Image (cartoon, rainbow, N blue to C red; front, side, top):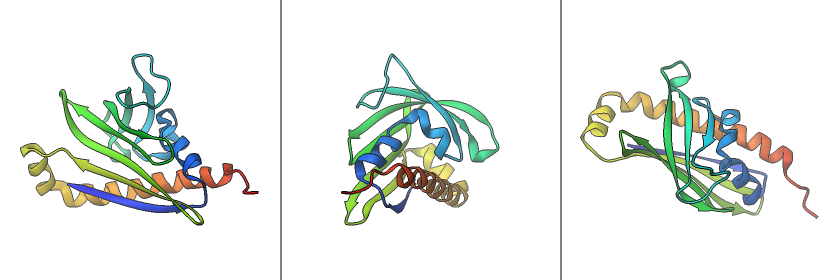
Length: 156
């Protein structure tokens, strides 16, 4: 009920973090979530900030809004949020950044919240959704990579 993908990017952790933590840009990166807006007057990432994401499941539908709460907000290191469904956490998404000699290793991961519904869903459709999520995370990270590497400041 979890998975992750890592992509090495020739960009600094700070450059990458600016992209992954700006939820209003998610439509540029994600194959499923095509827009997001901050809620309650939030204008950027902070632990506890809320936003909603507009999702086109599997890239074909159904289309719906999700409520999300930022759980991790460490510039240059980590950005994470939970998706809320019927007042409870349903899924947790995290971006972890690790600087390397050549740039940044970026890991995107998801973890379904534990519970009976998740276990049943995962046992019936998990094999398919796991592949869809892995493909989507790789696409997301590769799209972020293209922008991060293009906008990376040259090293002196």
